Length: 116
Image (cartoon, helix red, strand yellow):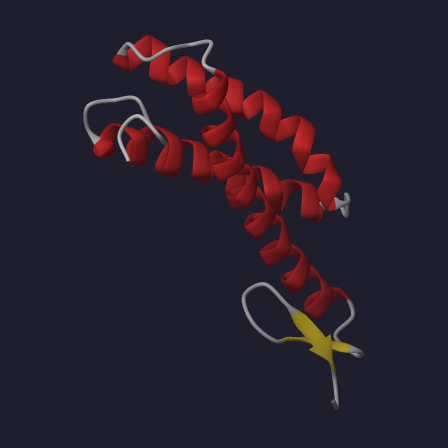
């Protein structure tokens, strides 16, 4: 996988920077957008910016390539997935809380109509 998904010599740097740091920031961004009832497509511009920030951290701290399209794409897709999951989680909570007379939380990421 080294060279395909990440460029560092160790997967631990990729997991630290992209998955843990970038994923956490993306999750929180997704939840913040869902709290303000923004649509999911609005995650895309934010994640494009955050993907650049993740690439910069790889470059500045671990001598990674700053302007690498492949690694930028991998980082951005991964954090966009994290952001969408955060958005969906918050939306499920909000639907169950805001419209508790009609909906109940079905799982971490979904809700359903009551009585069905």
